[in-house]
Image (cartoon, rainbow, N blue to C red; front, side, top):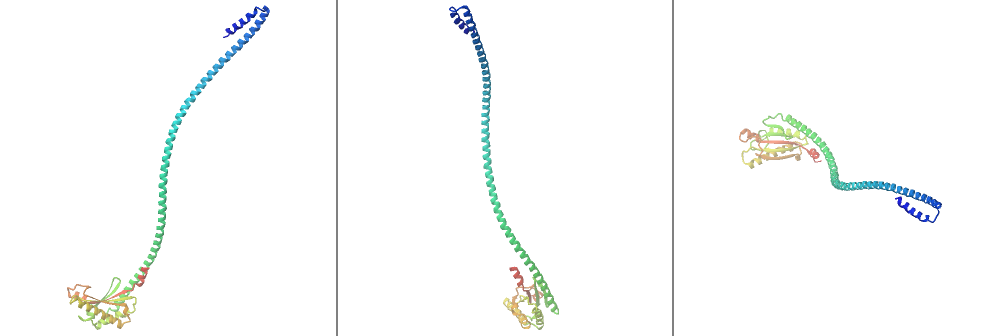
Length: 311
């Protein structure tokens, strides 16, 4: 690279040397040599700088290529990661949407349950009020029940007391003539035919009248009892005759009670039962005798009890 410019310069210098002196030639040649050296130095420096720049460029190019390759690899990786992330994002979005759908379904079920709970709560409140009302009603009924029990117990005591009073008043009469007993909360005074009547008659004998009047004196003081008088016969004779006879005998007892005591007629109910309510078998004479009777049934007035029960 250095020889070509030197030759060119030599040729240029030789040609004019024929026209100048040697001293001048040498001066010119020295000057030209300095120029050539300067040019060669400049050329060498330029070439050195070029090589250095080339090397720097090649180094930079390699670095850039490395960077480009790295960036390309990074880009490929980023692209792959982006694709993976996109797929993952799609999966996540699908799962999110699925969970959102399930959450909505759960929310709908929850809202339905809340509505049901609210409805049940309202029904519970209504039932609670009903229960409170029933409880209050039950408490009132329990109070009335206690009152009823007290009144029933008191009624039993009074019925027992009345039975004992009647027993004491009629103790002069034999058990074969009359019997006083309790049945279904009522006092029964059963008087047999031989105490009151002759066979087939409805007229009351003196001893029977005495027993009825003694009973009447007790009953006129016990105004809280109703008086049922029932006539009964055995099965001897026609049915119509027995009906008539039992009714007439019951009415005879009513007449004695209303005529010889202060008992008001509206307290008394009379009926004839004929042979249809026997207390013993009609197959024997003893049984028939027991069936021929008058039953005076004393029924406590239960108006107060009925009033409490109907409140």
